[in-house]
Image 1: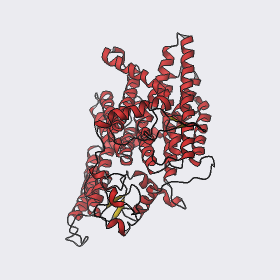
Image 2 (image 1 turned 45 degrees about the vertical axis):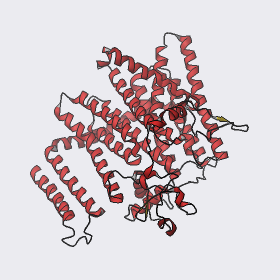
Image 3 (image 1 turned 30 degrees about the horizontal axis):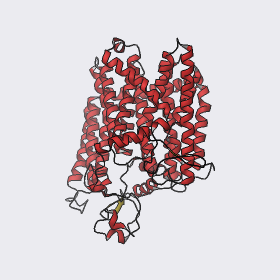
Image 4 (image 1 turned 120 degrees about the vertical axis):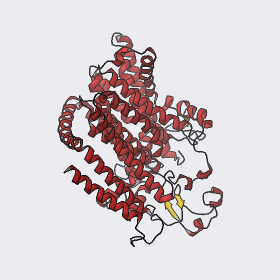
Length: 545
């Protein structure tokens, strides 16, 4: 039976590969070159054969995965119900945070949502029409320019900002995943779904994922601490900069914020899936597959996340090896579950780039119609490191005479974390603890007492934050929205650090009380300053941030 099934997979895959190679000879394609259709047929054929090999070699493994999916669903439902009963007091906070999001996304109207851009919706329309480019046609003046990518040649010529122009067609250099989602769900809506709606959905998703991750870590390692500590932490993950700022429907809530928040949503989802996969007696291959899938979606939404995602995947692979090395069968199954969605995602993204620009690595950034010639501009360089480090950490806000009194400076359109999110200083505590364990080679970390798992979580968050933060430090442009590329991991580090610090002061009640007041002041300051900055930007307007 297994051999017959493999033969069927092999026949179907080989047939598609043969059609791809001989499409011109048999009259299916009049174009002598390899178009998008032939490439897609080749990829699908190879994928079908790979599925056949996997099925023939791992039939029992595949059946085991299906059984685990069924059992996993019932177990997770029971686990969620238990968490709801235990942590019911956090749900009003969750609703309050989302209401604040709604208020700022509509800026007080609750129902009037004005999206500044509709880029992803336009790309989704192209996808639904079977095209990889936008259906918007460039004007003749733009096409007649000798070098349309040079800003000096475009003076007086109208063009859509940040579109990519190639062979007479407009493309988007942002990852296609949000547009693919819109292409699937757009029949459910009467009009185009603007980018603001995507930003709102992704920001809410980021908050809920951080909420679930915080609950999971708390329930496993810190449930002996007072409830108010967790309640304050939920406020922190929801209202720490820059999420409210990114939701302002003008000048933010655009394609830029949609891509950044979308990437963070999928990244956090992949990390939460990995934590859940390991937080059980036997590692779940289903959740590992979900980790790989969401990681691929994160990179397919924001390519710059390839480095932090790569670090996280290495940490997951290391955990798989550490927990499954005694069982070669489980080890291979878990690694395949993690890696296969990632490989398919990279193949799909490479094909998408090749079909548009003839290169698997070209995203369209070189052909972007921007304020600088992106094709000849160095996007990343160490020369930006010192200035960007100061801007992202220490740059103070600019004080203005009228309410709301604070505003980003024109010379540096960011505000340093020390001023805008002082609660993140608590991230120093878990970082210090990890360094001490590393250099002292603390033997307690090697024991299977739960500390090893918490250290793995903290190391994964620290590495993910560090990779994303360093990428921003050498990037040629600084902006508040780019802080969202590293803030979720940093926020989770600071929350867990606050919990660790509170526990360390258990035998010192006076110091613990002062520590609690300090944490509350930092959390409140982060929230108030973000509100003031967001109101100022909305009132005065800042399209360049």
